[in-house]
Length: 216
Image (cartoon, rainbow, N blue to C red; front, side, top):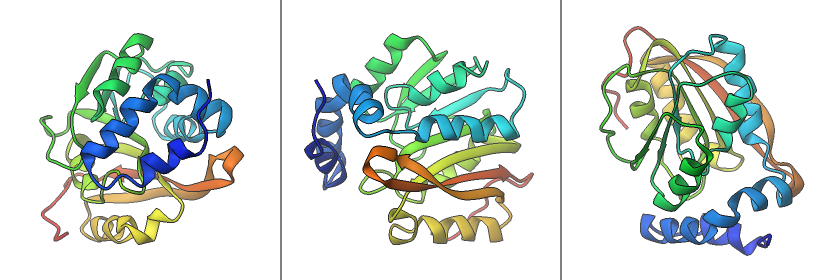
């Protein structure tokens, strides 16, 4: 059964993490059918292609931050990547992702808070469908940089409309000016193709200095 657009409204209008997790819990079972079949959610595939351009070594250790049901991992698996690790705040979404057996490890964590992950733990990070209305704020960039090794890459999407309104643009520029990362590419891309919704598709390379103390 495919949900209607009220499902999206419930997710994007959640006022707090509790409401957001309840919304995703209700949606988890139908999430793949809704997003891919009904809404034309192409962000996982285009992000996997973006990562492939900068991380050709398929043995790279990759964190899928905000993994949802594992759609990005499925796209990466199809391209030969195998050392994939999942992180999401929703236990219901993680349960669906675990059933797909596309990750070596899964971790429940809130990207809005410091992560219990060592510095420089991953060769690359992908973050798809998470940097958007009412989900994870721009401070998450600092943690994604911290857990990525120097010269590693971070590929992510930001839903259109949220890029400037939710502070992502300003934080990205501040981190670039502080030499925490450098921009490799940024392009306008499809996000929910059937809904005519786009996104910013971004790729950054983490610098040798990593994430310094940059005022938020």
